[in-house]
Image (cartoon, rainbow, N blue to C red; front, side, top):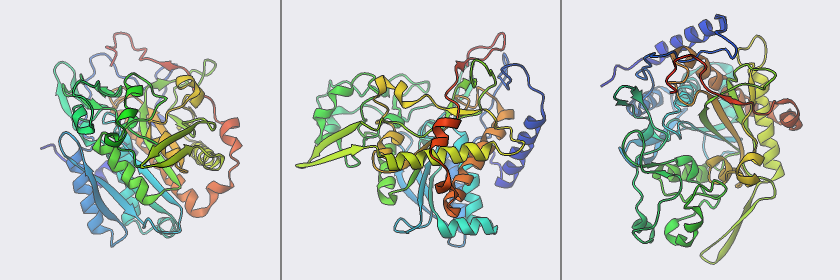
Length: 428
């Protein structure tokens, strides 16, 4: 069993790392930090599924009724419980926010930020926190993909996590022939040596979609067609979908990691965050017939405007004062995805076609191995601050006062992706 680190100690570590990074001199242009040749990177300080469970139950016991935890499903491979931490009820008249992190197992820093926020909301006596709890309903799924998050070791490489869950393709389960190919987002050869799905391509705008009842829908998505919905064949995606259906949130936040990008060719500074408000075009209409009823899904201008306001709020808050989060850009725009058809198979795409405003966090580093432990504190703090300010913005109403056009007019477009420039780097 790994040695566990107390929440208090982790907070201290975050602020020490954050402060030391902010005061450090840039390493180069683009400035780092970058992993150095033969640098050993340990993931042992990252939260594991058993840590998340233990801490959630501990926080709940100390929350004096503020927070309720619930198991919403189990992972496919290791059968880890998947938890939601609830602040407020689904039938509340308050604005409602759903936040999930680590849908990709090797993108862990959102989980670290979410657990800090959960503790703050559950135990803090700060008046601002009490105002949030009185005026906003917010639910967290702090580790959606515990299979992928579970650390394992690769010879001559070290600690690793995987993007996918652990799950075999079982076509017979869905009424398909045994030789039916797997969906394009199933990977039969992962680092862990077991097959699995990219859970973030396993969503469908029709929230009651069941492949067993729509097996005719399977064939168009056998190849890499990100412009088409997924099938809810993973228990993790179904757990998220069911939670979304229960809460019917006004806003859905999905946290990821991104590789390294610079802001632009003219300004080759590394971005610390890429954000995005839109995942399908406004003119996309998806129609499905289920039990004789026809259902139609599309993105509305109203929900898109709220998405723009939320993304603009985070951009503005993270850039206030002497902030180290100066290089924030959009993620590549929806027009760049699959001929402009967008990404309805992502949870952000599907949920945005069900009237939810959405926000994508793509913090720097495809995994924590890209940047190392020194930068991780900064990126955790970036997500922690941005999500907290979002929740507070709904509590105070500030988010509704932002001009949605700020998102299009003021936030820079995505800059070029770059690789580690360190001589002798091994490419990881």
